[in-house]
Image 1: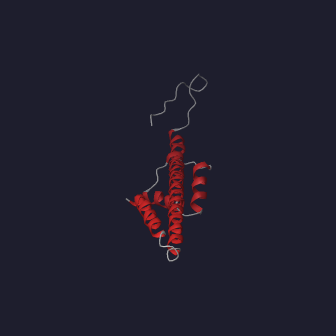
Image 2: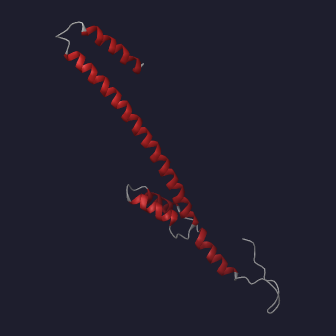
Image 3: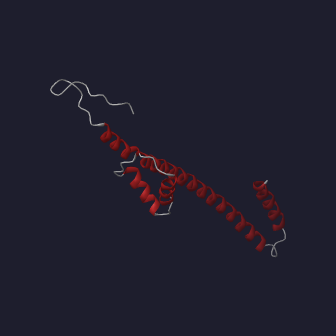
Amino acid sequence: MAELIRLGEKGKIGVNVKPKEEAMEEYDLKTEALSTGGFWIILFVMYLPVIGWVATLIFSFGKNKNSNIRNLARATLINKLILLVMFSLLAWGLHIVYEHIRTQLNYLSKLISSLPDNPQNLVTILEKIKEISKYFQ
């Protein structure tokens, strides 16, 4: 931090500045560095299942004087939102694949159950198995 210089004397035009010690104390409260343990505890709390979302929102948008904690919480919030979207898309995709496989297996089950009644269905079953096997190659 550049050294503060007082211009002028009492009664003359000049800059009214705080003493250097007061300025440094105010500066330290806003940008005080956290220790490794401090970061670990904050991240641990923010990644707890339900409480973590609340803590992340409080640290991000609350009246937190330390900008390091606020910026860490905002970065964690962005990370959580990205992961939430990614896992939601993955779950949706897996659900679609599951439903497709389930439908195909139900169809094969119905074909196989009707096999003793009509031997001609064997050709249909084999064709359906070939069609399904294309999805797994």
